[in-house]
Image 1 (cartoon, rainbow, N blue to C red):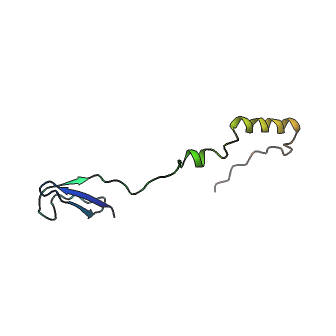
Image 2 (cartoon, rainbow, N blue to C red):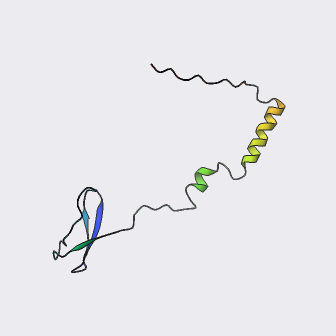
Image 3 (cartoon, rainbow, N blue to C red):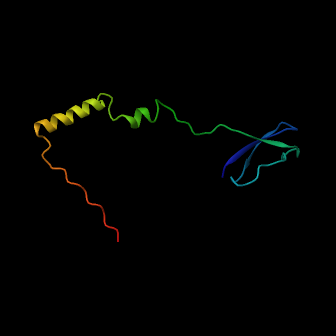
Length: 95
């Protein structure tokens, strides 16, 4: 259940309330019964470090570039290193 923060316009008190997402926002302060305003709080979720996408997933190794791998493939085909013929896969039958 999310925790929401509210600030009273009358007394200035800031307080938290456990509410479901579908619940209506509070309208009165629990201390002085004055009008309240819902606050936008910082999330406790943080991504730290050098980056999670570029450094971890996008590149398998920093030394290999796409042109290096394509030249290696063409060298294999020229030397005859690829001896297994390519066979098309058959689609699965649905009953």
